[in-house]
Length: 180
Image (cartoon, rainbow, N blue to C red; front, top):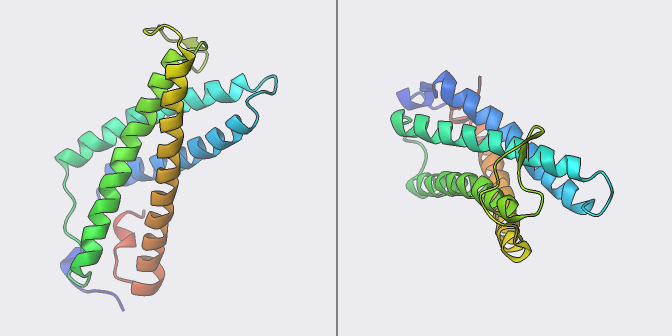
C-alpha cells in the first residue's frame, strides 16, 4: 500500500540522484578492485590494478566532496510519517556512518599511498610526493583503510537491504525518492 502523504511523493533532485548512483557504482567497483588487487599483490603486473584503484579513488574523493557540499546546501524532506522513529534514527545513523566511511576511505588510502614507495599516480600522471616513503606508516594507514572498507561493505549491504524493504515490502515511496 502506497503512503499517500506528501513526503512519499517528494524526490531527491537530479544532482543528488546522479551523485548517489555514480558513487554507488564507483564505490562497489573500488571495493571489488581493492579486494582483487590485494589478492594478486605479488604477481607481476599487479601494479596496474593498484594505480587504477588509486586513480578511481581520487575521482571518488572528488565526487564525495561534491556530494557532501551539495547535501549541505540541499536538505532532503523528512521521511514519510508511516516510518517509525526508531527506523528513522537507524536510517540517520547509517547514512551518517556511510558519509564518515566515504570520507575516511579515500583519505586513509591517499595517506597510505603517499607514504608508500610507489606514491600516487592519477591515470598515469605521477602526483607530487609530499611524504618520504615509510613502509610502516603506509601499512598502518592501509590497515585502517581495509577496516573501513569492511565497515563500508556492511553499511552498504544494510543500506541496500533497507532500500529493498521499502521497495518490495513497505511500498511506501522511500525507494523512489532516490530512483530515476
